[in-house]
Amino acid sequence: MADEGQVIRGINWREAFPFTHIFRSFRIAVHLSKLALGLALLLSVYFGGRVLDWAWPTPARALPGEIAQYESIATGSDQTTLSDWREQTQTAMNEAYAQKLVQYGVLTQGSSETPQAFQSRVMDEARNSHYMTDLEAKIRDQRDKAVADARAAYANTHFNNDEDKKNAQKAENEAIVAAYDAASNERRDVRFKDGDGLFSTFFQYEVRQVTGVVFSGVLRNNWVDTDGVKDHLFNFFAVGPIWLIEYHTVFFVVFALLFLLAWSLFGGAISRIAAVHVARDEKISVRQAMNFAVGKLLSFASAPVIPLIIIIVIGLIVSVLSLIGNIPFLGPITVGALFILALLAGFVMTLVLLGTAGGFNLMYPTIAVEGSDSFDAISRSFSYVYARPWRMLFYTGVALAYGAATYLFVHMFIWLTLVLTHYFVGKGIFLSADNTRTLFATMWPDPATTGRLSYSADYQALTFGQQVGAFFMNCWVMLMVSFLGAFAISLYFSANTIIYFLMRGEVDSTELDDVYLEQSEDELEPVVVAAAVTTTTTTGDETAPPPAAPSTDSSAPSA
Image (cartoon, rainbow, N blue to C red; front, side, top):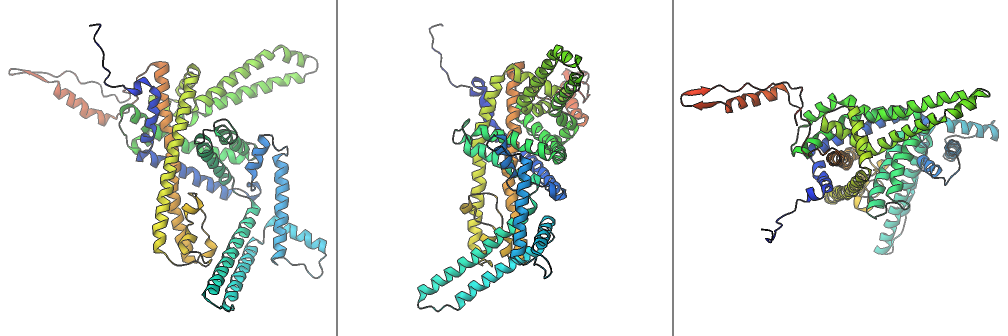
């Protein structure tokens, strides 16, 4: 009846608000197989980059503060070119190093050597760094002397009461700690004389930008103001990579190939597991995912590269044809008459660039969901972005905000794990290191005090055995911390896979559970036999023959 009331017994929020599917990404990302693949990706890139830093020539290394200086130049707050800044900074560092060589008596002026000749020799040695080991030994000797003086001062002090003894003991400890800290700082400054590894500098900068997006941007609801999401994303995608491209091109090419291989292999596997998980709520094994990624490795690797190649090729063609403009008289006329072609080329390059920037996150999910190739990934990602640009932007914003919240949760979880571990293990180790601090705090500074997950142990205050123990401890702690990066990688691919499903449903009206599945011939055969048995029918004493078994061609995808 028309007058009868309707009772709403439930609302399917995911159908009413499809973007809420993005909130599944955390549960999908924390699956152990995806975290393991994310960790493998992170470690392969990290150790590959460290090997490149070790093999790279010293003159091409990054100087302290180089990316920060380039950031100032890129934002227009500093007009000095980075090349001039590098030259000035390197000169200043050589001069400071030369002064230390003289200060610590590593180099002394000969009896027949003029001051000018001695200064020239000192600067030559500062550039060549022949005396680095000797200088570090002198720094340790000075530290040991300061420690011995502090102990002697305490031993020779007359105490009138217990309060005087307590104050003298405190002064001794403070002097010893200051001596170790000063030696550690000087040793660090000496080491920085030859710069830092390019990968190490780039990696630390990019990590700071990710942290800034979460803590300085999303959590403070600062999206477009200074030091907000916009600034940190710009630094992450533009400042760091462009610094590497422009001033360390060869390193960038080698590292980019390493990164692309690891990103394609492990990222493709994560996307494949996420695709099946999202569509069918099933979990495939790491072996199956890796087999899929290896089979589609060329597609995964070429999908983000092909659009860039198209832009470069079109740009080079325009540049070559523009050489006509150098022909006297007719050249400028020809260029002017045909300039519409250059504008059309620029229009095409802009479309490709914007499509790549907006659809990059959908390329890997396309291959993982559809089982297709790089050209299909490019076609679908471009069409979805241009067909529903605001919807894509909205989904990306939701994923970014939700990802920041979950990243913070995992960060706090790992931090609390480290704090509790440090507290209770520290209760059982009561020895002191040579710097008078507790041994355990010297091997592993308290994360509750530093407020950071990463740390540097004071190896100079430890004996050889303690140094070995601190090294192993650092490896285990850093492995735990690495799971934060593994989670961020897993969340990235999981969230973008969900966004791909949502965009495909919006544009192509394809159901969420439609995903490409691979089945080998061995896996299909039992299914066929079982189907043949169950379709056998009997009538009285007669048995009807089963229908013909379907083809077991494993090349056809199933959905």
